[in-house]
Each structure stands twice: as structure tokens, then as C-alpha cells.
Length: 264
Image (cartoon, rainbow, N blue to C red; front, side):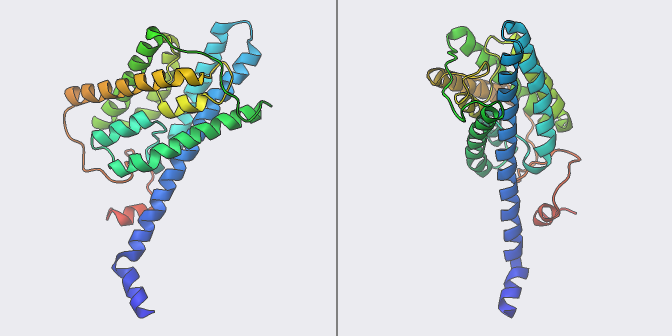
């Protein structure tokens, strides 16, 4: 027993605390992605029912709810995991040194599972079957170009704010950008591979047919790569050494997280 206590004092307890923090981060990405998909698809189903004859009003209702919901979800989970909810953002953050690559390995599966779960919850909330393949075909070079532009803009917005010390503005900025992009892009700005996968499971105004998913995800990956290149060119300074939890400035940090990183 004394040896065990000594071992804990020598670092095992700290390792346990790090593991607990990492699980909280994974849970935050899972829950945040679930809520995001529920907001996007739930508001899409609601808009389809409220305004069946007016496509413009449906789009406005979907965009407005998404902009508000996305802002709220980012504010909720940013202090825990950084609130990516998006494989494109997570990969670019890692590529630019804002988080370790192991976070991408942990977070992306959580984001995918969360978005599928959110689609199922949205269907259930509106009395639909838990999962039904979407029949909404989306494709053609105009919509694929729109996804490249939407994803490039989103990546640049998030990363330029991060690299210029303005991450506290990320939640409202991303909400406003996505709400606007619903209208200025022909694709309604999916800009998120995990959410694109989740939208397959909802045969609604906000869904996407499985046959259209590959092209959209390819366009989003291209947009993320372009965003990465532009951020490197426009804001070339290197950020501080990454930690496993890139908390936003002034945000709450769990006590064990501070201890494990040696911060006061």
C-alpha cells in the first residue's frame, strides 16, 4: 500500500486525471455533434411542415434556427473540447498546430456518431421513423463549388480568429457565417463531413441522398485544404505549443486539467 501511494504521488494520479479530461473532451464532441445535428435536421423537418408551399421561408426558418443553435452549442462545449463538431475544422486545427493529432483520432469518430445520433433524435422528435435514407439529391458542379467555398470560408473564419487571439468571438461569428451561407451558397452550406453523413438519415428538407454524399465530402475536404493554405499564407505565425485541450481565452478549465498542465 505505501508503494501504491508513492506511485500515485509520482504521477499515476496525474495520468488518471489526464485520461478523465480526455474522456470529457470526447463526450463533449459527441454531445455537441448530436445537438448540432438535431438542431439542423429538427428545424428542417419543422420548416417543411410549417411552410410546405414556400421554399424561401423554409430555408429562412432552417437557417435562423441553425445559426442560433450552433452559436449556443459552441458556447456550451468550447471550454471543454474546443467545440469543433466538424472533422474539417479538427483536421485543420491539428495541421496548424492548434491541437495534437491524437485529438483528431479521438474526436472525428465522436463527431460522426454524434451527427448520426442527432439525426435519429430529430426524426423521433417529429414522429418520423428513427432512420430513413434521404431522397434529396444534391449535386452538380455549382453545388460542389459552393461546398468548397463554404468550407474554405468556415475554416478561415475559425482559424484566423484563433491565430489572432480572438477565439472568444468564434461562437457568434460561426453562427452568423453559417446562417448567411445558407443563402449565399447554392448548397445551403453543409461545410461539415460528419453532419453531411448524419443528414443521410433524415428524409427531409435538410437531408441529402446517400448518392450525393461522396461528392459533398470531397468538396468539403478540398475546401478545408484551401482554407489551411490561405490561413498559413495570411496569418503565418505559429501558435503556442498545442495541448490536448485548446481552451478558448478566458474560458473555464477543469481543476484537474490545470493541474495536469502545471497551470495555476
